Length: 449
Image (cartoon, rainbow, N blue to C red; front, side):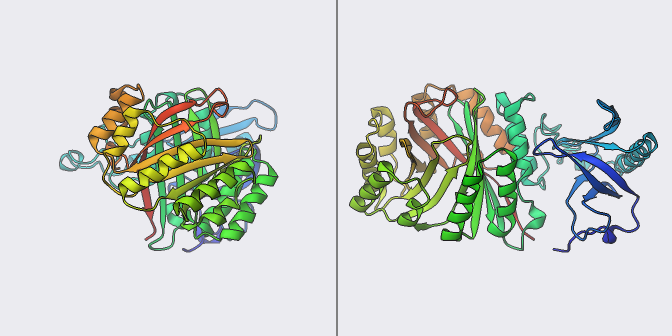
């Protein structure tokens, strides 16, 4: 893909220095800004050959002067988009006024665009989803990018409806993800979402090519305060496994729980995955159980990047045999790792499954096993309904959440239903301990053109 340089934007519609607030951490950095059409590009210098970032104006964008809170930031202005509000300040009041005027002129060119005909508006929405409210007809455009789809799906989560630290964490994460424009032809960026049956906890995951993901992931972890030792661990494990695809994930809960980490969603030998974890009794038991039951392949390995130990490592395992044999191996793990037995009602649901492809999710730490989960592929509508009831959750909010997927153009039916058990002491007061049901969706995919 051709790089965007300062020279390539010549002649600009307007250019000059502005000091811009960062999106991940709220520091201020002086940037050379170039307005071209309806996009505001920013660079580190006046002669940069590669753009640092850009802001796309939208029909719903708001551009205005802001009251300065201190002398250095006296001449403030803001550019509001569906993704976030960008704050910046000029050196003088005259420069502030010029930027506001030029940006509003660019915005007006969007408003002056021809209005779609009635026949078009009957099938396509004419208002853009702003990330906080549904589009006019309850769907988003078919060509919306994955970020817009995720923002729309997010609107189905009650505790992400107002500005709070959990929502801010989500925004920091989504901004750190590589974009479709960075993909080589045929390469993919894949987003998945997991939610507990009562929608009290969500996990957001994204994975893509290592070459465009690694630096953005490292920057994200630096920005949210991950320890340097864990960032080094990511690099070391990456060098050992050398995955073609890598990803990041974040957890969140209605009780303000927030966590994040990395994962490598590539098949590899389990023995190699175990080397990514902290050594101790749990990994020894995992290796023993795997040897007894012929479990050799790990489909994904990941690790949390929280500021405080103990560190947690997740293994996503493929199980041998047909559906019945796979369930037997999974049940043996619950016994071998000293987890409570699966409740009879849930066990009956799992036993009704005849589709092979059962997976096991094992999370270990230096202080013991953290969580164990059985993932059933392609659960039927009846299985989904029965598991929601088994988790003592209400069906109507869950169905409404599924509708968000459908309106976003994603498959509303879960790809997996998971029974999981979180050991006492590892919920830290913000995640549900004990038995829970979690559903996993393939939320969106970007494909390089």
